[in-house]
Image (cartoon, rainbow, N blue to C red; front, side, top):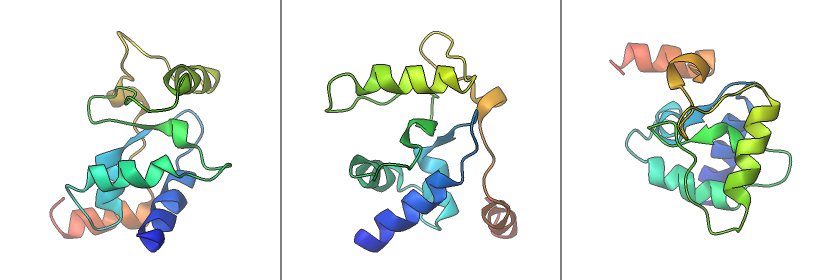
Length: 112
């Protein structure tokens, strides 16, 4: 799983400031559609410097975490980047990042 985690972190590191991606998107970019939970597990041990706060669930919500205060920290970090939450959700239509070019092209070729 270590290799998978590193791949997840590399993809998350590509998400630009002021944008978000979902766990499911990241799984798809890596060629593992419907493996959003695996991405979530990989994010639990995310090293410093990886913009973990730019990853939200499929509804644009900040996912619950074990660490006390991390949900509030994520809200603050997103706000500092200009990402506005509405009713506890990130408006994905406005702030979702479509992904690295190679991943988007791969999805198009395979009907994703």
